Image (cartoon, rainbow, N blue to C red; front, side, top):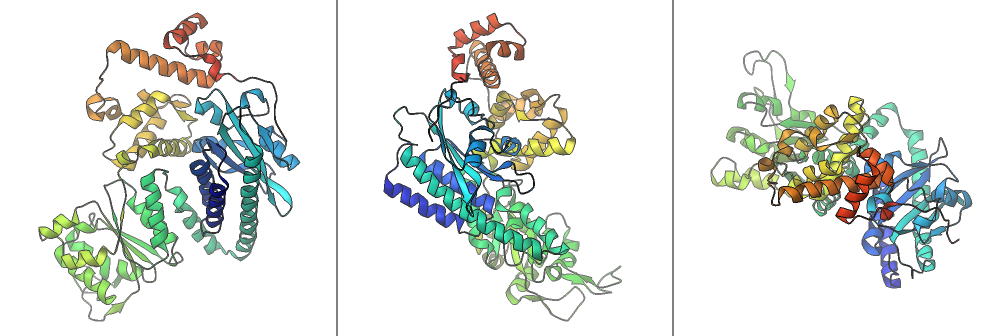
Length: 519
């Protein structure tokens, strides 16, 4: 992090203040603060830890530059490592060279994953009501001429703002716990399940989606979610509802493409006894069940023309009649629709009503295809790996570098849904704690299907694979050649020869043991 101009720092502090005062949950706000430090001041990674109320240990509440799995695993005792000592002493610590500091434990594997021979680390305390309740730590590119004092003062101000936000959140949480009933707790679980942060993705396209969700969630506006099948349209609909003023009311969903034309009208509007054969008693439709809440119509483009007319009337007049009924029923429903069809083309062909289209397309939100948000593939894969490792009772901890390359090279026609299925299958067949390329489905391993036909010679391809194995093993072994030989089931002599052949210096992956920090 090069020394920033005072004006840039003031601008960042203003953005931090605005972020911590927005109606986001605390963890999402803290994550955004770390992203601002990365975007505006060039940090390589950032970590915010807070004391656990029950155990007193330090948990990572927000982090950048590391996988979600590592973030969940990494914990600190007060007094343990640099982070623990900052919280114990209430004073900042500066590590100009992490390789020279044995107390820099690298539990988050930031140094290991960065591939850099050297980093700097600055950690400042987070004060809450006069006590140190956590820490803010950032890793920076190493620069022997770096002046740390201005950066420590800047990060200290950010940490104080974080402490104030934590204090407010603690007060709110205490009051919330006092007021929650059993039903309130169930609703709270639904909100947490569909928070924005549970929609995985940090790509530019997904940040645009989060911004649009935040814009429209608090209003009663009708929303149309566009995008290919499997991109997560239903999850976005849930997020809009559970972050709106209607979150206490029902969220009712209907897949219009899964119901035949003979049933869709009765499902939407209900029916009276005798409306048709076997209609022996009254049934409420989905519009009526969603009164006061949100109705989500998935695959809206599959509605028949006759049903489109009735849906249009229900939206315009806010009333309808059950099948076989004559009494109008008034409802207050917020409508969210989704489709993977080209509705504009369907209008031109007369398959979709123009007036209904313009009534539905008030606020249009587009979900990008997975192939267009490549940076999110690894985040999603890590998330699904941890999810299915828990579900299936497996000890899967990470995904190997060759397997990651296969995931990144594939074009994902089935989008996030296909990726989830692939990772579930890989976790199921995985024999150890690491998902390898051969654990992935055959579609990802076929060059023609994944559009990854080799453009190099066999010798070059084998050499690239050999280099990847060596780099992956060196990272795991922290530069220990004997350990690399054990991992690769070969001899130290062979490993030394291969490292020289590929021009790899194992010293870049070793750690030293001489301490050095400033207070």
